[in-house]
Length: 86
Image (tube, rainbow, N blue to C red):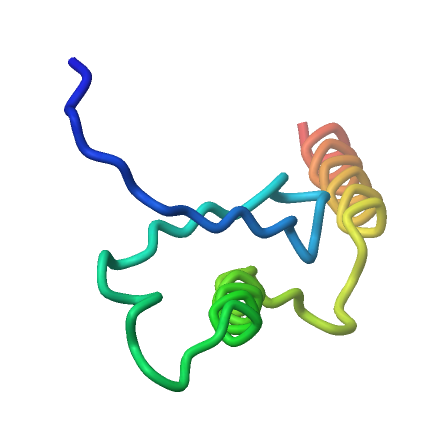
């Protein structure tokens, strides 16, 4: 269904293109009529909000291949123990 209203949107490229392509913001109908708010300010706020929603990546920790090695070693150890006991 198509509704007969028009909206103003801002499309912001993602700060992390690995996760998202872009963020789309729909402006309030009175956003541009407010005094003291320029186009640049609206765009700055949109970019700030888009960057704030990205998941925070944990620093440090073990990388997935290391966890895979630990898993394989644990499985081999369990297999070895059960093979020797039986």
